[in-house]
Amino acid sequence: MAGIVGVHGIGKYNYYLQAGRSATGAAEAMRRKWDRYLHAALGGEARAYFAEIAYFSHLLYDDDGRDAAVPRRAAAAMELQAQQVLIGWARNLGVGEHVTGVLKSATGWLLNRLDGRSAAFAKLFAPEVAAYLTDAAKREKSRQAVAEVIRRNRPKVVIAHSLGSVVAYEALWANPDLEVDLLVTLGSPLGMRNVVFERLLPAPVNGRGERPAGVGRWVNIADKDDIAAIPPALAASFTGVDVEELVNLDWIDFHTVEKYLGCPALDPHLRPFVA
Image 1 (tube, rainbow, N blue to C red):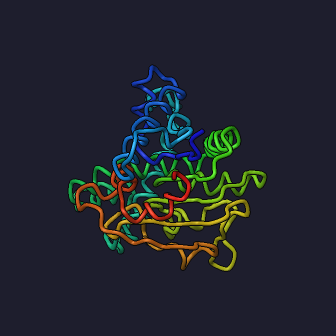
Image 2: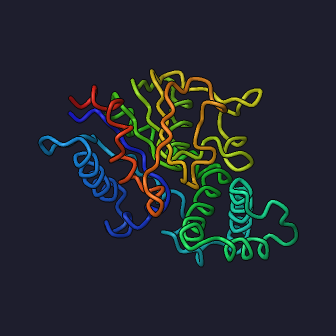
């Protein structure tokens, strides 16, 4: 059996819709893609590398993603949380450090200041990160979904991309019975101050997080221009990061899982498990 479980990042709700609102169908469609991406990098005969992709994107939305069906008060609260995430993220980028005033006006100003690729990313990143970090029920369901996939497949390797690295980190901490030989985080926002880091569960102690007890080895790979991975290196914030690989993938595709899975820096860490 394939020995890898993948955990996806932001912006994957469309897979759920395309699969007829089936989380299983979404996960399978993503698994096939991730297998193709990894095969293109590793070469050899085409094969199944991933046992399953832990799919959770649908759990971050209300009523199949239609905000209009959310009670007005809840929708307003979530919009406020997303705006706060956007402001915190932008400040990590060095944009809008001195922004004050009404959040809605401030976020509109920030989006206008950002280039097209950054603004498009922000419109996906802020609402989904806010939904995960500020809604306890959505957070728990997402974490459980990832833990169940890991428990079902008992993989040697977990590869977690983007927001998925946050969900996987918390799921592994919350379920100490889950053991993996290798955790690979790709384009991870785990260390992002005033947005993600301080809100992690378990909370960092004395300004440092720690590798989950069931993880044998932790490799973090981040593109130097990836605006989700701020800071790109995690060792300054987490005890137990064994290897940091700071890479230069693509100025345009700075955050896609396709580029990360095709990255030569991943090969030596993954090769022993897929040989």
